Length: 188
Image (cartoon, rainbow, N blue to C red; front, side, top):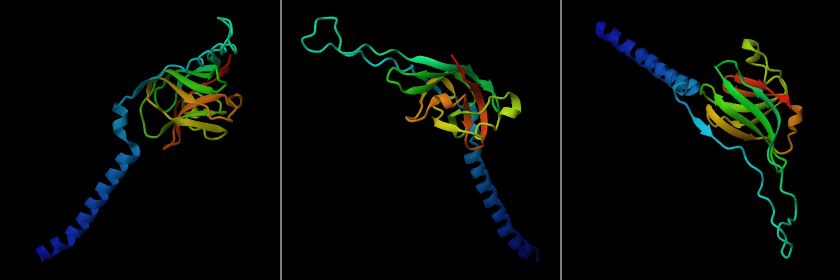
């Protein structure tokens, strides 16, 4: 009878082990806890002015076909505040010489995490827990995956998006719908 009882318990125990291993695997994939100890530093230069045009053939030296383009201009900026994770750095909305726009993160320092994005939003930046979940309530544009959790990086604003309609930037965890940190853009 003891052997018969053990035979009935083994399939049940094997099922529990399979479910536990599958659950642990899913949990590791979903939460990616190792990223908390992995830093990714990205250092990008701000895109500079487009090269000046050259003088047309036969023109006197020093003459040019068109004026040299104006370098990047900061339209708005702000300081990142912490939300779900300690976050610091500066955010600048920059118009480039060709008329395109980029959001520039400078001296960014935040935690790494799964599925982090840079969002341009119209949401107000609130301190503390009140600001964790507000950025997907209104209008927002994802500028792409966060390139690194440390450093200075550029994120192109898509063509056709008017940056004047947005007032903040969030480092957004798309997987858990929470802001790691955000900055209000003060127009300059």
